[in-house]
Amino acid sequence: MTSEITLFVNPTAGRGRGAHAAQPAASALRAAGFSVCTVLGENAEDALTRARAAVADGTGALVAVGGDGMASLALQAVAGTRTPLGLVAVGTGNDLARALGQPVRDPAAAGRRIAEALKGGDLRDIDLGQADGRWFGTVLASGFDSRVNDRGNRMRWPTGRFRYDVALVAELAAFKPFPYRIRLDDGEVREIDATLVAIGNGSSYGGGMRICPGADLTDGLFDITVVGDCTRATLLKVFPSVYRGTHVDHAKVTVHRAAKVEISAVGITGYADGEPLGPLPLTARCVPGAVRVAGR
Image 1 (tube, one colour):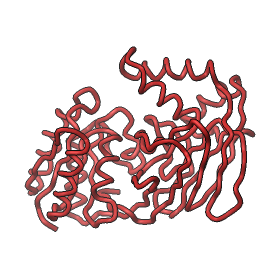
Image 2 (cartoon, one colour):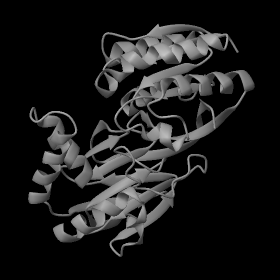
Image 3 (cartoon, one colour):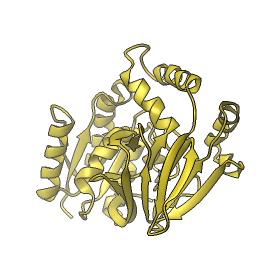
Image 4 (tube, helix red, strand yellow):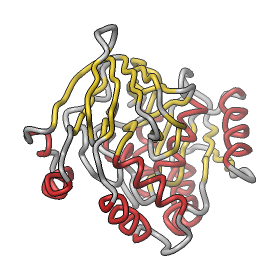
């Protein structure tokens, strides 16, 4: 393995934490004997082009500094290659880093963990999901949660996380279940009314909401959580338990496991790792061992 490491940095992640996090992470890597170069990019497309070029040129690892959005962008560069991915998680959600047991909002510790893993060969292959040509590491969301994202993304005020609280309240006011068509692997098409369908490669989204609590990054299968035709009152009752993962015990919630999922619903956008994929229908496939990560 080459001793040159590429830092893939989002300077705006976590309200500027990305820019501040790059230096201690780089210092930890250099202290371990690695040389470090930094990729920024003028925008997401340009940054991804530069990251892919670094991977093609044989960088020893691609280390994403930022939140889940930056981790997702980095996956597009390293998936299907043997280039290790490191995560310096300093964003708002950091769900992929949490799933991997990596330090969160401690860039120096994350840098040291990555350096130790690379020097000691402590690397592991994990599964990724792929949908509409895009790789994802955590959850593909659709339904009520994605409608909240849609509304929040359209809003200009308020700013920050409070915007999504306002969007949540607004969506609740107009809430009703959505008619879905779902097919698992090569089984029969099921027509159901559901509040949301979450396809989990990892267990959580939204900064620790354990929507698919049993998901395993190495088993070659998705966990698919289907929240059925809830009333508004039931949804409000079930929602807080998502942070503990105990919502799956509710009578309106079912969990399935499959390597391929086809979902269709009118007026619903799919979001993977918090990034919009586009309107349903979508087909998601679990790809075993699609990316190599640094650290256990």
